[in-house]
Image (cartoon, rainbow, N blue to C red; front, side, top):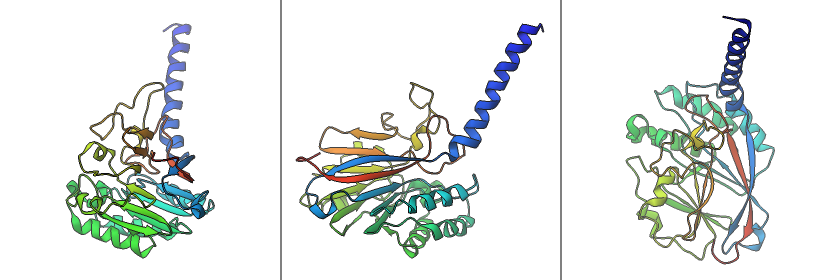
Length: 282
């Protein structure tokens, strides 16, 4: 190999090494607090300017150092959110060890001044998304730490109506149990872990915001291209705000945790929405 070839090979090798270090050791732990406005129909005057924080997919387990989640929770607490919603996948379930791990993390649960609710994700149903006893234990741990888990249910909390679908891939996906009681006169927000549910005929007359997670934004995204891997059928459901053009507006959180600590161009996210009044329906 001549000198020029050696320099070129060394430069390529160095770039690959730096990219690998960044992808494995930097971006997975580089939290972004995303600030958005959330116009809501029929919002009461006293809720204008209040904040709603979304945290999703913390994936506590054996696959990465979850002290990052604890540190992120502590940072989020300093923002003093008025409402906090969790949109599923609290664990990457392998065995019962995840219960004690989650219990350790939940000592630092971020709670809203006015209310804290959550839903479950597919990983919260254990192996093959079919272990209801795993989901029940996770629900109990969340309740013990101030998170009201909605499983095809709704809750009116300090002027906001929270509707929660249980996970699409689980054994308890029955959105009709709650959507039949939808009251369009109430300022509401719907929580749904998997955004593919947006394409199902389960919504009745619902209009308004849907907060989801599940995709992690793909975790790795080449610049100017779509993520090569997404765990959804509808590949337009990557991350961020999407107008569904029928009165529903979807927001997909990029996830705070990860199945494996690999991210590129998709930083972990906590979202903070400022509540505003909508001009008519969204």
